[in-house]
Image (cartoon, rainbow, N blue to C red):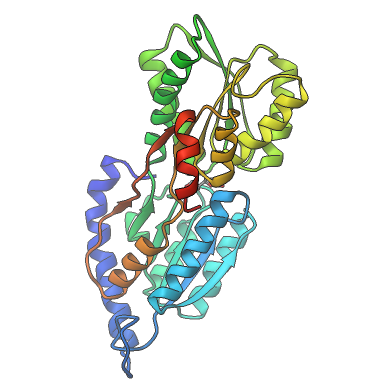
Length: 337
Ligand code: GZL
C-alpha cells in the first residue's frame, strides 16, 4: 500500500526500476520494424496475473486489460489465479522463465510477494502493479501502481452515506453492518480504513459498526454473510458493502428476511458495475462509490514507458465519481462496465 513515506522512498525505486527497464531494453536488442514494443519492432510481451473472476468489476477489468493489450500490439500472457496467491506466484515464476519483457499483476492480498518479486528483479524484468498494491520493505521491487485510491473510496462512502441518511430522514443512532472485501486485500483494508476515518472524525456519537465480516467480494458471500448479520442484528439501519456484488447478494438476504433493501436497510456500495446501477435504479441500493475497472489503456501506456526505460509516476491514479439513487436511471445507458 502506497503512502507518503513510501512515495518519497519510491523515488529511488523508480530510478532503479528505470535502469531495470533500460537493461531489459539493452538485453533484448531487437530487429524488425513496427511500432509496438518500444524495442524497434520486436513485439512487447507482457505477463499478466489476474486475481480471478470473483465479481462484475473483475470481469470488466479483465476485458479492459485484454482489449488494451491487443490494441497496443503486445503479446499478452494472461493467467487467472482464481483468487489464490499461490497461483499468482506460480504465474509470475512462469513469466520469468519465459523471459517476458514486463510483468503486471493485481495482487490478491498485500503481503507475501517479496520473494517472487526479487526473482523478477534478479532477471531484470520490471513489475507493474495494477488495481491493488502490495506491502513490501523494498520499494524497488515494483515500478508503479496503476489503480484507485481505496482509502479515499472508503471516505467517499461515509460522506455519501451522510446524504443518504439525510434523504431518508433518518434521525438518531445509526447501526451499520459492513461487508468487507477479501481478507488481506488492499481494497478491503483501505476502504474500511477510509470509512472509519470519517466515522471517527464526524460521527463518533451516532454511527456504530455493529457487525463486520468478509464476503470475499462475491455475491454468494454477500448473501450468506448478510443472512447471518440479520439473525444476530435484526435492527441494522445501514449496510456498507465493499463492492456491488456483495451488496447484490445482501439484497437477496434482506428480501428473504421480509425487509425492503434501500428503505428498511439503506445500502452504500463500491464499484459501479451495471448490475449495481440496475439495483440502484430499482431503489434497492441508495448510493454507489465508483471504482473504475477500465485500467487497460492506462496500464499499457505505462508498460510501454517502463519497457522504454522512461520515468513513470509511482502511482497512476484512476478518475472516478459517486452516484446517488436519483442519478442511476440517467447514468445507466452510458455506463461502460
Ligand atoms: C478494486 C478491486 C476489487 C473490486 C471488487 O479495485 O480490486 O476487487 O472492488 C473486486 O469488485 O473483486
